[in-house]
Length: 163
Length: 277
Image (cartoon, rainbow over all chains, first blue to last red; front, side, top):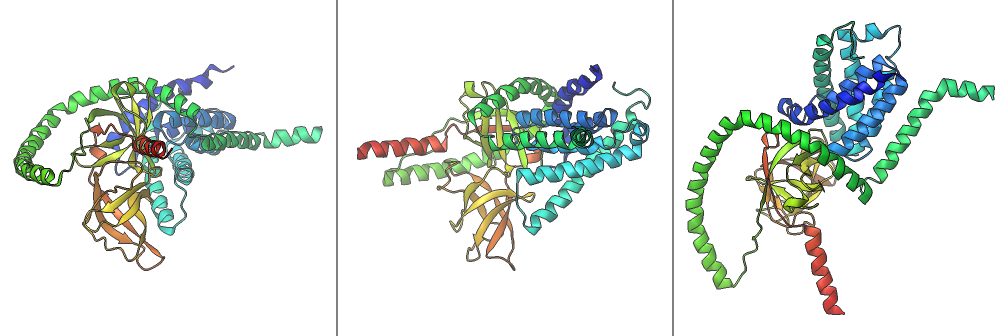
């Protein structure tokens, strides 16, 4: 049993506090970085796809209960995000994927998919305005999350990860 | 057997994903069950204690600025009060002459926001008052400007509020000027009155308030101003974009109106049935 599997779950608690107390201070018009997604993607790349899906499922469930969103909506989005991030968890290429640029692009991709699926589950509407607005806002949200991801990966020592 | 083993080896990630997604979808379907509500109240109240501590730390730093703002607000309120006092005397006289009762006798519960979940469609806030302070699910939440949202989940000491920027919250509103009714909903990143007939006379700048017909918010409180009308060219109905009076980005304190619409209606209906029997 690898104890390192439990570390993200311990880090999740302060990250949720940060997300709910400090992140609103740096959000603009409901566009805010998703630190929970950052944590999920980082540890999925460092582990494997199964870990990503399981962690996403648990992270999502906890967030649904704490933030008051529809129970299951974040579970499904974070599970799928963990699944997608799992494709970048190859042991041989881990260092490449954790480089500044690649990690930022991975976050951008996963965050966009995460936001889109969550919008779909939280307010289902297929009018053209909705799609355009959601698309624009989802992109803005993803870019913000990716930018924070870039800062995050820049300050983490390359050799020694949180394992 | 070998075939099944190979199949499992090749597709186990997908199988695992499907199982987790099915569980999530099942949970979405039982989202409003009492057991889930109980579990939610238990978990978020535990977490709210920690959030409350950090929020207090931030608050002490912003205190100086806040005191200054409050002084300014006090001065403005003092000017308003003197004008309102004059109007009150007139209203009392009119009420007496019409024999009407005062309908607004609620003792508001003052609360501080301790955490917030910003999302494009489902904004929620957590406040530091719960069942012990008289907060119940369904109570309307206001601030000095207008309606903030509705209490969604309650524990002993904390409560979660669904704000107007939550797509789950649909409210019946009306134009104060024309009296035309509509359903207010957070949609596509804006607060909108949806399915508005094209014959409606609501114009830009009209004040939007909660309707007397609302089964969720039983008090008439302002919500915002009509900003623009959409979907004019196409479709059967228009949509009116509403600018909220409440500044959700700088919201720190709220007041809970201690009344639950459904309970009031239920009691009335029961009384009516009793009379019939």
